[in-house]
Image (cartoon, rainbow, N blue to C red; front, side):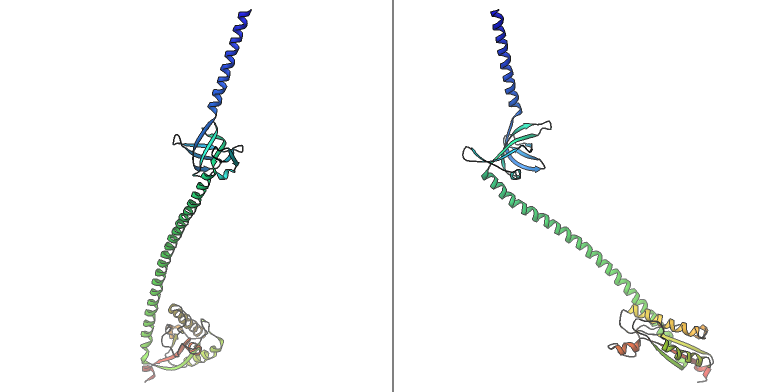
Length: 308
């Protein structure tokens, strides 16, 4: 009976000791301490470059993580801090346990107050530099965009100027041709004439000139082998292309009135669009401009037919 009791006691003691040692070993295996410098923060994790191994350790911060600033030679005094104090460049001591994702779940994070101030000073210097660099890059991108826009606008302006010059050249050619055609009328007598004036930018025939044109039409019908000459003009206010267009439409509208009231097309010369040529008054005054916005209608007869 005594032998059995001693053996049982020995077995129990051995088992208890093994269990204690096993628990101690498990506790040691589960608790990890890392000393190093924070080199990055991302959400609830931060990376700490281990002072011992030189490799990065991913540290998971939780609601139960205690962040303490330690003071004194023996680090006995401590002040609880917020996680916002964990800035890159801060030397820290992290204690915790590893999880299934090979992260160190932090129970405590400790650092010196002097180290925090240094890290914050560094961050205060780095942040403006980074912001300045980013601002400069944005400004450069904006300037490049503006240069591209200016280049496109310049190309468009050059195209528009080339098109405008082409219209001006065409108008000059048309005016030259009209001047040549009407310049060949030296063999004709002028037997009647009416000048029709137009408001600025207007091409419609005003009622006050219709009686004068009707009188001209009646007179023309009494003349043997008559032809009607119509010349449209414009003041020099506005672009050359616009003035050429105005003179054309004014001459066309007067020609239409003559045709609608009994003048056959066979007895009319093609309407002449003279643009701003042969101004009869200076365009420096409103009165002069009004005189230049005109259509001149003439009854012509060949001198040979008239016997002159």
